[in-house]
Image (cartoon, rainbow, N blue to C red; front, side):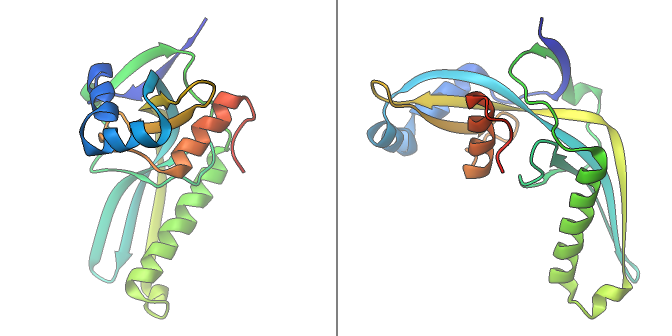
Length: 188
């Protein structure tokens, strides 16, 4: 029996995802290059949320960042605030990846990546005056994605769309989902 997960409420329906995969110039190019859309599935990736405050002198910047709990390599999912109850749903599905990274590992990833961004923004020598406060926020939160399966005959290609932000994802997300689908675990 599938277990229930807590997920962001999708803003893209199944029909809207099919239309986005198939229509327009991008859809035409996709059909020519990799074949027609054959199937579509919703898939959920786990993220851990962290409340991050960066301070440099009197300047403070705060964000809620989500780091994927499978590889830690995906781009941060940025929120203006911790998602509230109306932005969340409980989903009973088998189409979700299990977290592979410990909370300590995802914490270290957030600290390291944010520190690198800050040093890139303010410079290494000013970096000594920069303070970073990272705090975990709540339980794992799953982000919905639409996986479009394209191809001809025995060939298949995967195209992935973020089910909240309505954008086609790149290689990192696609590879993470392909590895899960093939049963090989998380990509290295």
